[in-house]
Every structure is written in C-alpha cells, then in structure tokens.
Image (cartoon, rainbow, N blue to C red; front, side, top):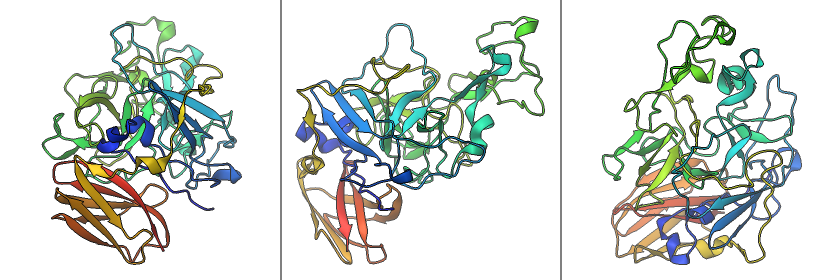
Length: 407
C-alpha cells in the first residue's frame, strides 16, 4: 500500500496566509492514495470560509489497520464532511454532552468517539460501560476499531497518528473537537504560559473510593433497582464511567479534559483538549474529550446521519502548497535541496534554530536532531526513499513544518 504524504503545516506562521491551524493541520491525501480495502485514505479535501473549515474524509487512515479480534465489523467509506468553526467560543450556558458517535475528528479524518461503548448495565442507562474495558480486546495495534456502520474510530489515543511516547517536545495537534477547539497528544508545556519544560498532561478524573455501586459521582443516592453490579470479577472498579469522579486540582486538566494554555500552534494561548495517558503511557480516563464539551457545538456534526455538511459555494479550496511558510516571526526560512539524497539543509535568516524532528509518511517521528545557530545540516542517509516532513523549532519557540522527499 502506498502511503500518502502527511500535510502537517500546523504552525504559528499560518496567520501570514490568513488560514490558521484549523485549516492547515490536516493529513491530506495528495491524490489517490488508499488505505484499508483500497479506500481513499486520510483527508481528501479541505475547504474554508471566513468562519468555518469543511473537512471531507473517508474515515480511513493512511496507515495499516486491523485485525479486530471478536469484532465482525469492517471499515467502510463514510463520505464525511465535518464543519469546524474557526472562532471557537466557551459555552456559557448549559453544557453539551460529548455523546455517542463521533465527537470530533483526528487530523487524518478518522472519528473521535467518547469513552462509552454504548451499552449499560441492565440497559438502564445508569451504569455506562467503559469502551476500553469492554471493547479494548478488539482494538487493533493503532487502538482503533470499526463500528457496525463501518465507521473506523478511536475511543482513546490514536497511537499510530503521532509519537505518543515523545516526552521531550510538546505533542502534536492531532485533531479538533466539534466545538472547534484543538486536541493535542499527551504532552504539553508544564505551565500554561508555555514555561517549565514538557510534562505529561494528567487527567483530573480519579477512581471513586466505593465498595458498592449505590451512588453516582454527583452524590445521587440510587434505589435498589438502580444499583450497579458488585465490584468484582467481570465488573472491577473502572468498568463503568460512573466509577470515576472529577477531583479538582488532582490533575493538570479540567472536567472537559482540557485547559487554556499556550501551545506551539497558538502562542497567544487557546483552550485545548489533551488525550490522557497514565505513567505507563496507557490510556487514562476520560481518554480524549471529557464527558462534556468546553465550547459551543455547531449543528450538523453530531446526532443521527450527521457528518455530511454541504460545502458552501463561497468556500476556498485549501492548497497545501500555499501554506508553506516563507517567514517565521519575520525571519526568512529556507530548506534545500528538495528532493534530497543525503542531507537536508536548513537556513533561518535572523533567528537561531533549536531542533529539527523528522516524520515519515504516516506522521510518525523517525529522527530528532538538536541544533543551534542559524543553519543546520540534517543527515537523512539512513531514511528510506519517500515523502517526509520536518518540524523545525526555533530558539524563541516558533515552529514550522516543511515537507521534503528523500530520493
């Protein structure tokens, strides 16, 4: 299977082009590259207006997926077009539940699902089953699986999409929730102002100190007919969503599983969700977006038959080549030669370089180089021929991603 070139131009310089990360962050299929069962993969097209971004995708990634033990479903082309607002706002009214089905979209066009598997104890809707506990055995190596309608999705961190083990750099922007706020990998700046180095973002949800399931996290006392099963055997503590409670200040993130902070893509700060992992880098509840959205959710993305928005006639088709930044905070950037056989040269006029991280066509980190000064020569001889991208960080914290080809 031929792998597509990941178009990862999520950088703070994109404001030069009036586009921004919501437009430029997607892994775009360069033409006719296919994934599972010959289905066109990743994001097929990005269109945008002054207010919204329209992301058209099949819901099939470019990397290999499957098998799914005990799961009879098969991924199918979903023909989605999701609408993402370019100006997300905090919801000041009644919070919106991040319900069943897609609650956001990863940057490769694959659906984000919540922590539930859609079933509850005695079908009462009181004790809702945790998808990782009850369906985790059917997850593939990328921690995803298909739904009955063929919608491939992740309830937890999409580990094949980004390097979830890299604790030296701020994690990539890996998707957007349907309220328009970005979703990052597990590592962010230790402090919300961008200082303090890099830290794993810890969930604020903790297992409750209960010995029986007779109350809910909000303190509601249940009647006998509403009790959950004994905490043992098939139903250990953590088997149900209601086994968790949010404990203020116990983690780095709020009840939505996010925080307002500086990120490489938003140096002025933005509310951002983070996927959560434990100390062993295994998924930690609530995994992606919390039980409720932080922001206002647009119509058309959620609910039955959703995800099929119409691109308006005044929308502009995003051309990735126009997003290649020529300036980084006023400094000219040059990367050459492209394509290259053995060495990638980087020159920044007016700013010092800090690091260069290389990603393969699946969006996975393949090399990390710490550099200094205004020029750098990055050795690429060991890389297999193909399409790659270089994430270039400067000493002042600016970032830009440039695509290149190794011959």
